[in-house]
Image (cartoon, rainbow, N blue to C red; front, side, top):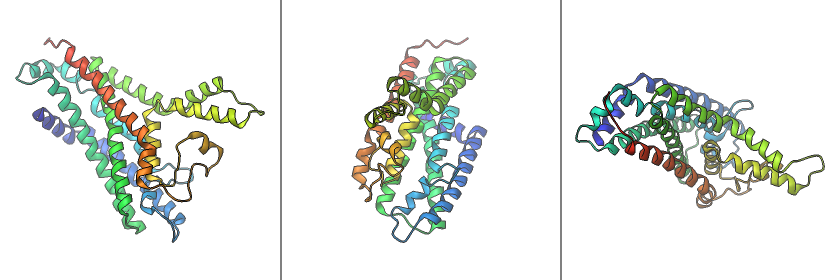
Length: 311
């Protein structure tokens, strides 16, 4: 497995695909940090806390934050690295030659997945380090120990989030023989989960718990809570909630009803300590990890059971 891992890692890092994807994420990070710095400079006062973390969460009036760019582009990178991991080897005939060697079959899929995850980890760590360095340099506020720990937790959950999309792309690569089909299937799932889940959740909530001009607060809360629960089938929503809970210590709850009722609801006067923030986002983190393991487990079982023949 280590030989396959090294070979796949070298192929990824030297490919034009990786250069294009890294350039895309790099430019997005630079653009996001420019927006954040302009926003933080105007919002930070002498008594402001967690200024360093605000460089990751701040957004402009009509422009998104660094977190939004990550949640948007990480799935694209994961799909691009995994949609042809297995079927490309199968179609070229290399897979039958590979398993005919004294190499365990599971080493093939494990090595490919770990290589893709390692590439994405390098990319994520590099981009986060770039944003952190520019934030310290330009804003001039060094991070505290708690902020560093929160940032490490944020990097960990981001890598897990990237692992889910990579595992999903590998899953379709195992199930479909054509690389174009696996790529389109992966992109279709991403589009539905990222863009349309909120619309579907809102429509279902309005049918199950309809609202009108005479609706009570209880009916309103039920509608919004149901919409939030349905939207959490999307890993992007779970990732957004987890990162906000980690990088915004003033957030005291992730209940969607509280945030809809008031722009300040759910935020506390005193920021949550690190342990309480971890407990707050623990369900989201566990769910993303479980989805990643499930997607890879299905692809692993299917790959181990399928017949591999040379044509």
